[in-house]
Length: 118
Image 1 (tube, rainbow, N blue to C red):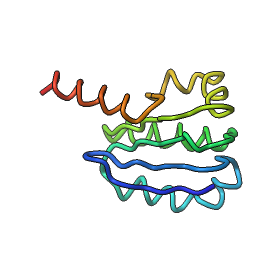
Image 2: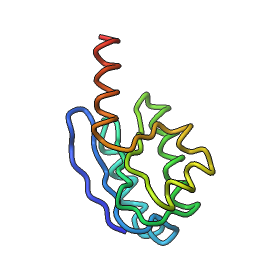
Image 3: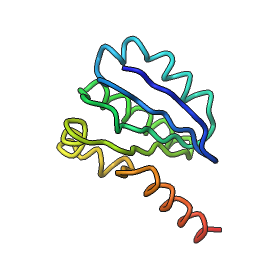
């Protein structure tokens, strides 16, 4: 599992690639934690290149969703497909954590809300 990060306006995008499983959580937990804590922006997790997710990966997403929500920040999921999407739907993660097929779909929704609220 690899991940890259980049800023996007008032968000940070975290792009994951490969298997989001117990091994990745164990090996990448500290780096993932630092990324979330060092950035005060909303976080978009791009799962479009994740081929497999297990309960450890789901646990990390839920943990950081709750942590960011308590800080009045967002964790948004985009691009889940295949096995990760099936697991997220089965566990109803996609009903709890904001989820979109495409980054453009989320950004359009976010900025529409921003214009209405502003």
